Length: 147
Image (tube, rainbow, N blue to C red; front, top):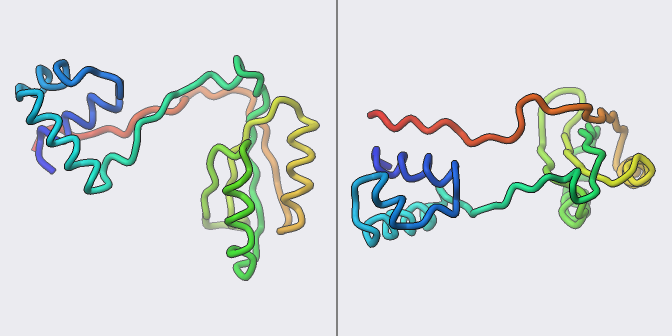
């Protein structure tokens, strides 16, 4: 990856819908050259996809929470397919510490959250934190463009 690739990634993180001609102008290359570079970054797995950021509250999901789950290692093969199928799970990470899984979820109500936690507890002990506010929302990774 060179400086131009890093600049392209930085531009795409700011707005993945930036027209190809604008990306090309931003890195001083032709549109076909930029398209080729983006395709290469996708094929290398550096760019994994393009996402839409939505306001969950406006969609009726007013409860965001982090659930820590103490999952025995022997149950991971059973747990992973279960958690992948849960539509309210935004993210699930295997972490260090007293709990082995950290699960970010969004639900319309606390009753829905409580019902989900009940399902999780068949896999192990849980600890839940409900989000009051998010002073630093999702943001892109800082890409150093200087070599």
